[in-house]
Length: 494
Image (tube, rainbow, N blue to C red; front, side, top):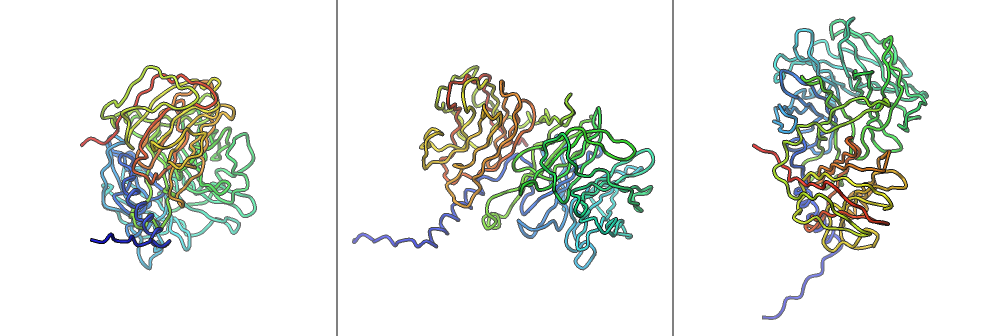
């Protein structure tokens, strides 16, 4: 039989083949233990602890993976790791005041303990109310919108209500901004949760002793304002230098005005619109949205987009800054120990961690960078990938400490061979680089990193090659002794 001559693939066919392969790989990289809707697109969230359960509500589009929130999705948990999805709530009404979506807001219990949901409708922007008796069946208030217009002509936007109770009534914070003056959080008051009166700005962006980099921003969104032992905290989300970030400010709340004393970025990388809830143990629990930055055409085919960070507990440090520690419940994800090593020395190179060949694990290790210029981990590495200082055609994601810059770095420049996927570098301040205690959660496409007990950065990676599964320790510019290395296989139990 004559040999068949292979048919050359055109550029378009090659592109289609690469896209098909990338879609297959993206489906394999769907997170396993991070909270995520069963399908479609999800974004901003809010939460409440009610009758012994944690409830998370999220902007949800059931018809398309990358559109605006046409409804609120709803998930419930008893332990912050096992989530059960309930039917979506707050669907937008075609032709109604919220025809263009039920946007971000909050849920609070009224004085009788009945849940009230506040949200923003757009075109035009207005604030709306929905009510429930059991957190399952919701009805929209007949007098909606409860706030119909902006409080002044110089207010550029107002949205995303955050509501709380004080001794003299109910208060609502709205994200907004003033023309020519920058971002602001607007404050309203009500006696019955239905009639609201504008008071004044709770907070206005101004130069201060906090490295948020948000001066000149024209608006804030997704505000969350709450007390912590020793003061108050305000979270806002905005775009800083073209990148979406959630910022925090801590300080004092006097005469219904917030005076910040410290601030910063909650978490670097793929993290936005973070919100808190107070649970039955008095803990302030924070969860943020992890957006996908894969190409939109790939996400459309895959049929899902967006996930949520692991829950952390907030507290105030002695210097006034926020501390974000992983909740103890996360140890419930551990199925078995893959490898435990008391001490491992790595010279100017790398050491493969044997028996770790997967994309769903937790790693804990400690070390002192000492003289090494770089020290840390190689994640999602192909076996043919050369040491990090050498150019190569393989795939690898580097997570390391830059000793001189005193920064933690997630380098995604070689994380995937697919050309249109994200390949940027994410960095976070490290502070004292003399000692590093790293706790890394890897969940398929999500890398969530805690350093020295606090949340530092989150990144998403989409390796194209199936062989991109190796894990290694590495050092450059000097030797490093890694101590207390432990790798856990993670997964949800029935």
